[in-house]
Length: 496
Image 1 (tube, rainbow, N blue to C red):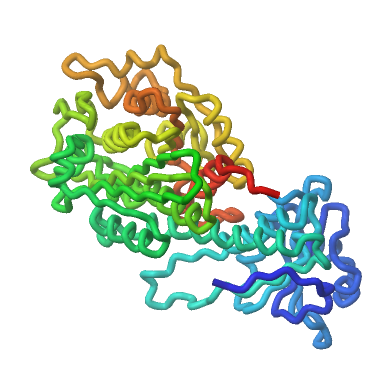
Image 2: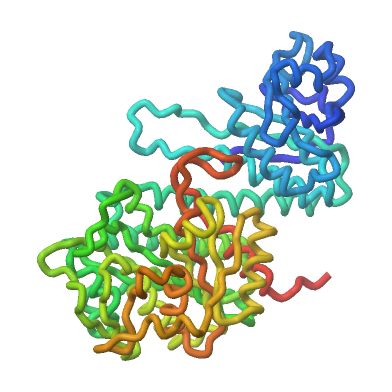
């Protein structure tokens, strides 16, 4: 982990490999001494490079030998009036990606945006750490680059302790998101349900969490027919992992349920496209693990139970057949209309379990439907649930976290699309009707009882085909920060 600090030095006094400074549309932002060292108007330099100071534009330039910094990075920030901590977060990611071989970076950007210094500093540091992420575990000639140390240059902060806490929080949030990214990027050949349970065990040990791993035997004895059914076509057996964070003084009990399909072939209804990223179908479980790591390290006064519902969906000789009927934990029966609608089957077990154990509120995260991806694209995730209050809180949390989320409805009239002739309900609605994200949500709602519940469909947002600000190419760690923000907002207010 790099060293991140708030510096009271002036920009031209900081010794570093790279000094990142803001340039706003219409000019301004670059400290006078830095502009003098460049010997030209920074805005004109950007224009000569055919850049317009839009957020994301960046131009690296050398500085004279007498300067304390070796290079300066002019970072486009857009309109100054719109530059808030969210812009600072994105700018931090831009700086991280343009740092090259630098081992030390300094920046005045956090001090240039609207908002309290702690909030701006935390946002920039978070973006910097998220933008520094690389997954090189399988590269024999990886870059070997460490994340550079970062000095946030801003003069004397009114509350240095608050700035320090904000930076520490940013480190924890970015670390949790990057944990989820690492797990989701790991090939399915190396991350079976059992291996995911092992990773959960490591996390539990490092964070002081209680852990319980249910093997096939315990799943069968407990009536977890969804997880068992989905996993029965694979030679690598399913697991359900329960992690518990129990701080003293907690008033609310939250359950996070994550879809952990370590590889989704579609089963007998075999997929024909995008099989190369079906290793990422456990992104919901990875998000739950990341959120638990962050919540525990932030010492939130909220009791949190994480339930990972993990199986490998394969078309083996023992696989579920279309038309089979399975019994979910709690007794409800489900006709399997499509073996590729498997995520809702494993989540049904996890949601039923969370209700039984007395959660006050439940959220699940899942790469659940292509329909949600079609509706919202590859950056946003859908949010729906039985409680409008909790849905609004999750959406607000996403806004604070810098993630894009949008509410989808749960139309009661669509519930009849899940009626089965032979069981309590069927796991897939009519394909010609559409609304697949909504009917999937309605299916899950059947297993949440009277407990307030929110569903996050992260199918589109969990994977990116290109880098964009703090989102890397590959696994994004979608919803980790949103879940953490949502949980932290439930904690009792600190005494002043």
